[in-house]
Image (tube, rainbow, N blue to C red; front, side, top):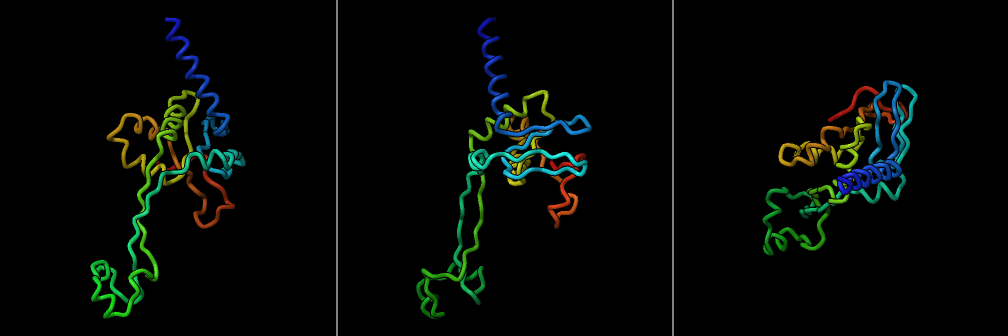
Length: 179
């Protein structure tokens, strides 16, 4: 029993340490909101402000991103240029090694240490909403049905709902969040 008590205390200490990294406020409504990894503050339409994370915290929790690049040449159909061989490059006078641009398909994933921190925060009773960047929310939304830990995080994770998506200066809603 004493060993279990030590384990619970250790988990509570870990959670409190995380709140040192991820600012949290209680809104006037009583809803508690945590900023997970955004190095900018959230200004709510009620005048309250959720502080920014430090640059170090934001950088530590960047998504793992893999780029799949497809070379493209101006004036050439992208469907056909994908299959160009040596003859086509010669015929069209194109340099195979110097495309005009690349179409990039991004594949993103949440690093293990980030998922662990998110889960600890999600299991905190005193925390209602974890504000995460849209790419993290998107990954969670795609995977919550397949993974219990992701589901636990997804239940509390949200992105902000801007008052005017074209104008950041107007802030975000304190009672509307995107899941």
